Image 1 (cartoon, helix red, strand yellow):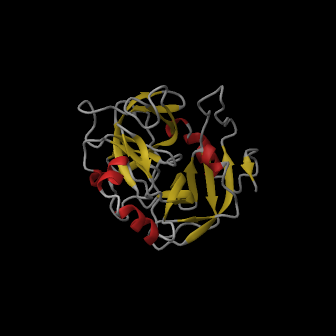
Image 2 (image 1 turned 120 degrees about the vertical axis):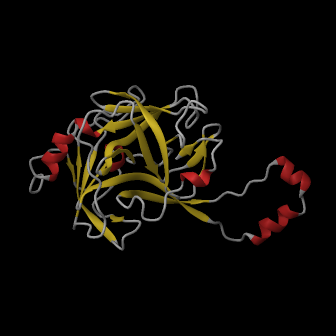
Image 3 (image 1 turned 90 degrees about the vertical axis):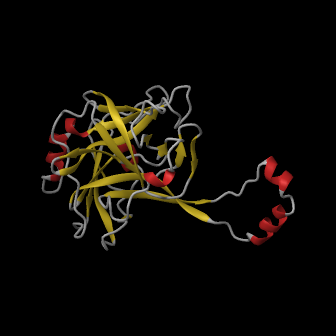
Length: 279
């Protein structure tokens, strides 16, 4: 997640067990780089060789490469551009609840999904469903938002991707789950669009998704609790630079895909859908 530069980063961290239905689908191990700027070398030159000698083995962080949300006990919704890189031989590891790992049984892309290209910078119908081999027993799914009144509501964004702030963009990988707020500025037949505003004209915990947060949720508060309104697709940064104040975030608007989602999850085996992937 990318956050405000003027707010304590600790305020963005989630509590243990707060969003168990938000799932990391894909990760990789990234070595932590130790860098010294010129002032470090000028003020503490004797420490440089000492640290280099002590660190004989590199330290690694787990880098998030894609996320999803449990919407039924055995179904996850994510972005299609994330799902195309998954396979049926990998297991989903939940972050809590004592659930253990569950293998993917089926991957279903939206039949009209088109990935972004150099000519077409935004994906189309960027949504996919993952069926699990067995239901998750100890984690409550998040319900889908059923209305069409998302516009101008404050959404809560949750993600585990790269971390940074609006002045410098993404610059850290630490694998921590964070939440931020942002107002939905525009809504159409496909997208919920949110702008990363600089203070003071901003929400209290203003933020946006970072690299690795594809498929992560935009949640709306309802009388019944959190409801899933969007799935993160991409960012339009233009000339600003990724993660800087002023960029626009694009979330797939799930209220426009409710019928498709229901048709998939309620089918016996989805055999009538021509958008399945079997790796």
